[in-house]
Image (cartoon, rainbow, N blue to C red; front, side, top):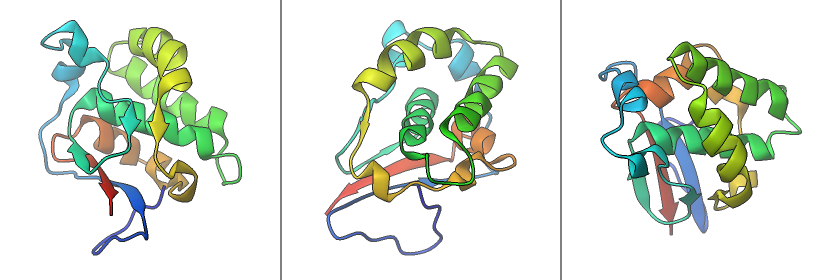
Length: 142
């Protein structure tokens, strides 16, 4: 995935993330969702939409790892970063039952192989992306 600033375009579809350091912490949303359906989030990133919820952002980051074999970080290293982050926030449940058991078999990013970059997994970017209320996934179908 490419993390870009300014105008973003692709000939047919694009997916990108916006990482903010200024929003509110969404850890509580992760630990205490309003209902069980909220814990799944979006799993198919194909149509023009923004996703601000914690669970959709976790799913998107996990699905990105499906396309990471040729970059500086391996799929396993990126997934380990996600798992450790979720555990540090107080729950390994989501990884064990949703990501590992369901998302990797049913989730999808339209043109995912064209938008992969390891920068999401550098420094505090992953935590700021997932748990900051102003960070989001943007998918566009042009």
